[in-house]
Image (cartoon, rainbow, N blue to C red):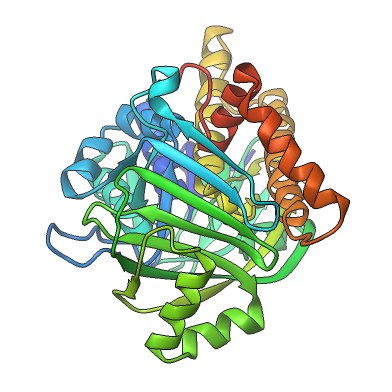
Amino acid sequence: MIRSAGRELIDAVIVGAGMVGAATALALARAGLKVAVIERHPVSPPQPGEPVDLRVVAIAPHAQRLLSELGVWADIAAVRACAYQRMQVVDAAGGSSLSFAAADYGWPCLGHIVENRLVAGALWRAVERESGVRLLLGDELQSFETDSAGVRVRLASGGVLGARLLVAADGVNSRVRNELLIGVDGAPYGQSGLMAHIDLERPQPGLAWQRFLPSGPLAFLPLSDGRASIVWTLPTERANALVAEPVEQFEAQLQRASAGQFGRVRLAAERAAFPLRLQIAQRFVDQRVILVGDAAHVVHPLAGQGVNLGFEDISALLASVARARAAQRAPFGDSDLLRWGRERRSEATLAARAFDGLNRLYGVAEGPLVAARALGLRVIDHLPPVKRKLAERAAGIRAGAL
């Protein structure tokens, strides 16, 4: 049985302390488990008055509930978080649209737009204060080995840790996943997400708006300072060209793409484009190792649900710990981990394929499919039960999250 330099095993070693890694550490520690976190460069949260960071995420209600239970949502909201109560999806080619309003279902909102750095930084600050977490800052994973009882982790600094579980939260290019020779399904989209912050002539507070263009979806997401964050999916070559275009030309093309929905648009900050891909690990569990967040799954950003899937990984892991304790078993048993892995991979695959299918469906610009698409949206708009289910999926709402 693996031991750590003569000591008993700790419960979990987590590699990576981004949003999902830090939340995993905090959640397991709050559940009474002993945790260590390996992170070279932790994220500091922005302070009130600092510019809004370029990269933002849509926090779904179930993810907000997890962050509240972890005691960090109030810290996030105290800096800035923008609730959106309405969502509108527009088909540019078919001319149809579909709108959702939280008030129609008795919900307080459909979600919040928050910058990635704020969420990650607030979680990291909470991890720093958590007595059940051992922080290994500035260090990195050198190697690891597993057996049926646990995992031995060797650090670049020369230290050795023994744990019952290794959690890979080390991102899309996960070193842990690669060393386990776990393959991935999916491929690059050949598209990039162009991100920028925009001043609007006609702002529409509380509205998350998305227009499906043949080249890819364009989303306007509300920010707490009254501006909008855009995520514009385009073929990579075109996205890079738009990043480099003179400001006036970029603004003119963005205004045309948004069909004047917000009046005149003005670039308010830098532009950047990030390549997009679909990627699902072929397994989420390998003996004493699990993959979470982007190490396990990367999905198209059109629904803004990528990090929410990562937070669902954590909620499911906590549920697994609770079931084991209720059955008077130690957490992270083989059957518990295998069940967690099957359920999480199934959910992530369904979500990824759904988002991928929508992206492909709305990439068709002409022909009978366009008319069928428009008819489908109109039918859904007149079928309240179906529309509610679609609203729940679009907002990432889960049962009991509100």
